[in-house]
Length: 231
Image 1: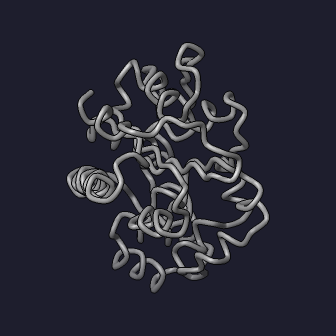
Image 2: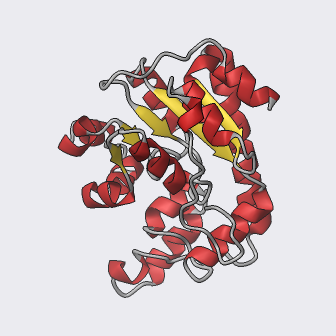
């Protein structure tokens, strides 16, 4: 609660249409629910399907940031959830490129997060293998796969196993979340909304952060696991 109050401090004006809102939470950390929340508030949101259509993840991995920002879909949307916004260090680019933008960072228990990652794609890496490898620092393994593959398509999607890599992934998860919070705290904490995914008041807090009526905040749960855990 203290962290959320800290990062909410001093900014409650409703975002204007030209202000971008980036959900920079890791995948499997309520990103779809954030997108649904923003859509319910009347904000035009670029979700996973928009990112996939534009191949924004691949363009991030190749350093083609201007190709992302100049695209019609980026220009025409205000809210952004899922990739590539959570990709390593990309929030720093977004922070400086869009000085009026606001950012949303939800964090969950790291072990529960990795369990959700395992359940998503049958224990394989999520999405494009090259992008996943760069996000989670498994580039060497990806290059080894490419050398052994008969065609690039053989390793293009879900190419890496996640089994046995729990310590590696959870350490990346915890460290990058800490780095992100520190980055905003040292520069402009009013631009970041941070909250634990488990916090039952997260949507009320997000409403306040965006200048929306907190009394109208509705609980949102998208992409639940069989046990009811939000993803």
